[in-house]
Length: 223
Image (spheres, one colour):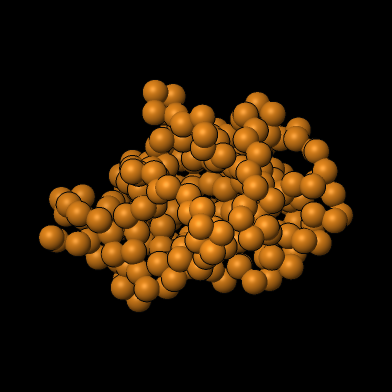
């Protein structure tokens, strides 16, 4: 029997849509992973962005810190930058501009920040999660991102990492647009490196050590 074309096949709504449904700029990357959705979700939650290394990724992060180094005021690096730290209250850092916007256990982790990222040294504005969606003060960029896990067959998963941005007035939109033209490829590198890191952690949970991305493959440092 053929499927009824009138059947409602709408997917469950995304937390990312609730946080930032209308946006001007976006980047989306996805990756197939040979692991169950639950394993992929837990690996995503444990992801520590400070353990990801590759020539391109390190170059992007180094270049972003150049303005602060030239001003002789480099920001101290935190000991870890785990995704879970944004969502676990007992490890929440009030000085962290990125805040948790919602979590659907086993499926989606959404987070966001407000800042003037086009400045040589980023100016952040911490906004609490409840006020994020309604924040409209002129001069700022609102950025929301999410990891979303989708089942693919019975033993594989599709992990999506999407980042969205909207600005609060035409002038900041123009400034961010010029900035985005330059950094969008670098943002893609960061998103893909994070996805490949999760892939390795989910497919090879028995391998300890920081993740190193070599070309298009991700390997764990065995040292």
